Image 1 (cartoon, rainbow over the protein chains, first blue to last red):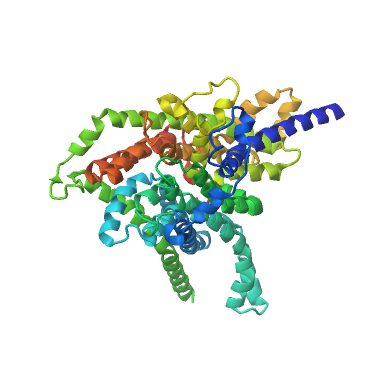
Image 2: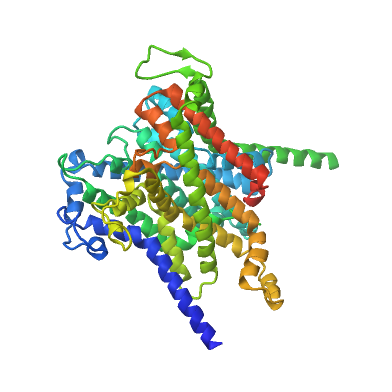
Length: 286
Length: 302
């Protein structure tokens, strides 16, 4: 019995190490690249010499911010990314909460159709909308503006938000609202003190998932923007250029990549349980 | 009295309906505005000769854009690339995802640690991951060629299938965690007593896996497969970053992007868009009819 326990323990430790290594390796690698000096970035004849930076520098980070907002290739896209993803998330969550509340609590015809439609959109190829949106946005003056990206982002994240929220809202014991009113609370108090605290974790989880989705997008970002007015970081990264035409911007790309990965790592570290619950909320039920 | 009650309920039902529709209207409106309307518009555009570089030419040309696309070898090459990447990566993801799910299910310690670690590939920006892999495999900056059994000067992005292999690898790395988590969610719903009973009857772990776990998880597996297949079919970001479509590695989404945004040929590009949409419909149809995926039942709110 004890021997079997020891064997399982060893096997599990090995499995754990392998999973951790593969999951984190590309992240460690991009961090390593971002700390290398331009001279050493192509040097090293062994795996370790290449994987571990030999001379550490933070120049790749500081040069990203050189020249302030007008000159820096990174500051404006970073601000755009943060604002566009945040605004899209807030709007998507508000719209999805209304819809999810109705679907979870009310009886009305067309409910199944709405869910099926949302599911269809989750599977919809975004490239199929890029051309028409490009044309529409150009004539409406939305091309290369915040709304031009916010609108497709919130739409394509709505199915995810609605499904997550419906799954969470179905778990809420709504009777408590009435119970609180019987105990003398006003409807507003009952909603404020009972329902909001119960719904908040689900709403928060959906918001994280939607934010990650918007933060991640590349296709719309390169198709519907043309300048720093609204270009987000993933798109800006693809168009980074070196200081001169002879220098590769590898270090800068790596540094920018690390900076935009930090929010994701924070979300994952603090909210992993929620994210997993949200991702799998009712997604697979026998 | 009874009549009054009936009227009251029906009033109430009606107002509940109205509230339900009102609450759903903004979300439905937004979804229709950005998907249904554009796809209809794409259909219209695809029947015209519309090149924004030559705005004066053009007009209705019927199906000739479709003819141009479907008779070009580029389209079929890209369909092949996309299908190849989709099939290979989803097959690997399913296998690794299942192993990952079993590993997490049987976790002795550190389950939270594994979950946190695997969420990083899920959450990381695809473009960032693509750059990381690109620099890792690039002979100038990378470390892959310094690994044993790999030639120091192997040019991964100099040839079609080695480029696609790296693309697949990046894809597998990014999405296996999601697959693993979905499968784990299916795994925990299995009644453990079945496994125990089979164990008592002398079934090996391998037999139990194939005869009990897999059949019971079939619905979860199929839903996960469908979602990942459709997702993989849209592949764009990694190929754009790693090869830009060079060495014949274009995917259909890259082709659409090039026609629409790079060449501003909205007519031809829209035909590509509509054809991609049709491909997605075909894949969904195969899953629903062929494998009997009942998504509505597999999702909440059915």
